[in-house]
Image: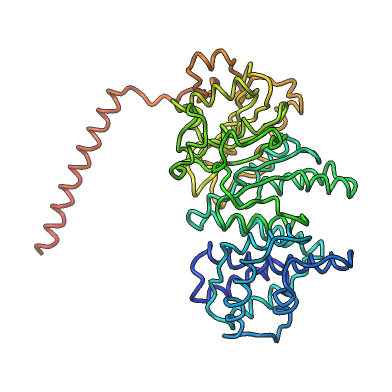
Length: 485
């Protein structure tokens, strides 16, 4: 059975269980079970390579010892083991000693995980399906990685869980433009399910990882934080799937909860790639971690202030922000002034409001900037929905090839040879300052649609309403005559 069919059959089994309600719970349940199988397969490989290696999971709780036997415990006994032994032990794993980092990863995943299944028989069926996947087989792992990407995509229809997913075409484009290299510290302060991290790993492996030392350098340079338990668990599993031996760099925490001045020189990074949550409000007291002139409860604003601070001189960033961040006033104005004074905001890619559907239908922008030099001019690129398509949707999402025209225009790493055109224009920093740092600058090549003379439009509306009223009275007369017969 193919990996895709295996996952589908597991989801079908879970749908029969009364305890698993909806896509978010189903994916969460799938995730912790796959996590245990993946880390056990990885442990067995590490044990063969290094006789002194010890698994972070106690022997009796390892997948191979309670789940691998298809005729093993089932029913009430399996539920009692999972709920009474497995979960309590993994939630309380000691994190000291040689295997402390790996234990911290396991404990971090299970701290907020739950077993939603209520049928031990159905759970045994799921366990047996999962046992059939060999995560030490590179081809099989790659196939599962593709299926896992689709599972994360499915979260878009799982209510608020969709906020964790950034379209892979967008993450791949941003990573490609930033061009990270092994050894450059890369940080995602709101990493969600790890989309930017996985894209960066693929990018570096395809281009720069030639030796085992390159791989080690790359993995050692990754940093990430995720506040919410479900995406944190999904991200850690995603890292294991992508061959990361120690995903302990993915911290389960709130990046904004650390005081702004508490981020020291040693915390500075070379690259920030992120899609911070926007439209939401931080909990009371978080804004007091920031300087007075940056204080707000708007999450995206706080992240932008922090990102500017965290970049090393010469560091570069690509950040997804909503239209409101471009035209907003007050704290937003002060942030944009700070950004353009401390960084070279060289490019803004304007996306249509359908890119993040269905869970967000607002205009979004990709901001690219580098720390150390003030902005002299900013280039804008307006991305357009492909011809013949009114908007992006779940069935017709944005794809990487839709962004190739922008990549071709970009001008390489030095951004040379850029020209203005139907989708590209530039604005000087002086012009932006004169606008009160309003960066919501429309494409000058776009001709405003002529909707006609307002007086004529109002007259046409009055005529249409009169005709509607006449037809309604005529219909009433016809119905009255029909009923009278």
